[in-house]
Image (cartoon, rainbow, N blue to C red; front, side):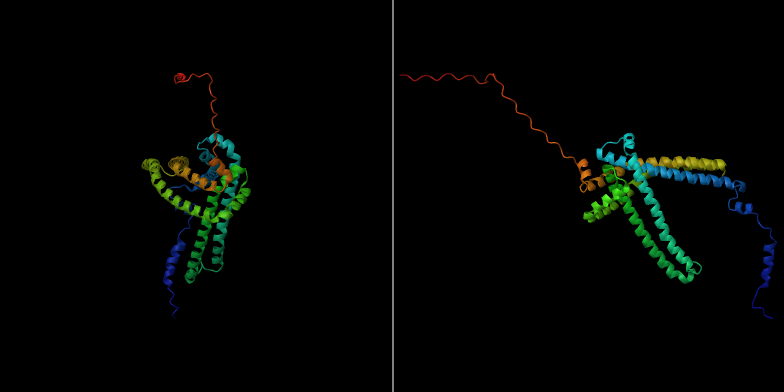
Length: 332
């Protein structure tokens, strides 16, 4: 009887597979990482969770500092002098309002991205496109192109909102002491009559930003090499000395890695000071022509100098020319 071409000889291999002892869970976890003790995986997980928590705290701390320094930078460019201590005391309350705006923008952006990406993915899963991808290649390609275009438009819109907030919302909040909601209402009312000029401004800033990014990226290579090359040499020396992965080395990497990142951020920021000052000044001079409160501070009307009073004549001053002789009387 011809039994439909089944190859029963392969059952011998199946018996060998079944005869092998099953792997324990710790052996399975240790296989990808042979140098890590499975008993310390929970310890490593705790370190990773602590590093993530620390990164989140540092991120929100820097976001708050960035919010306050927006107003310090605005005042420094406006007055052509910088005082960080006095500026922090003067602007930290207004900076907190702008910090709330940045949180609202960040969370709403991530929520919108989740909706834009999640809905097409759920549709593809429910339609079975991922289970039978070969028969839905055209639909998946078209959907990916459409989704990419929508995401590009959304990212550009979010970037435009952020630029408008940094360049124009900050002066309104600073000079009128408004929160971000009232500031946006004021800004949108000012933009409506001259929307085309604001579009031209955004295009010009986009071009200038690309040029500045290219120039300062090239310049920033120097401080990066100064910090990164010694770090690589230290890592190679530690590896040559036989240092392995353990809790102590991972902790040292996290600590020194954070320090290196902070040093790099400081050096790159120091190199980028000209661009940091130029773009707020460019925005302020553009906005001053449309915002009288800013224009009055940026281009104050000179106080007219009163004319000097005329000196009164001095009496009793002798004449510099000699006196003329008396005219002779006529004869006869």
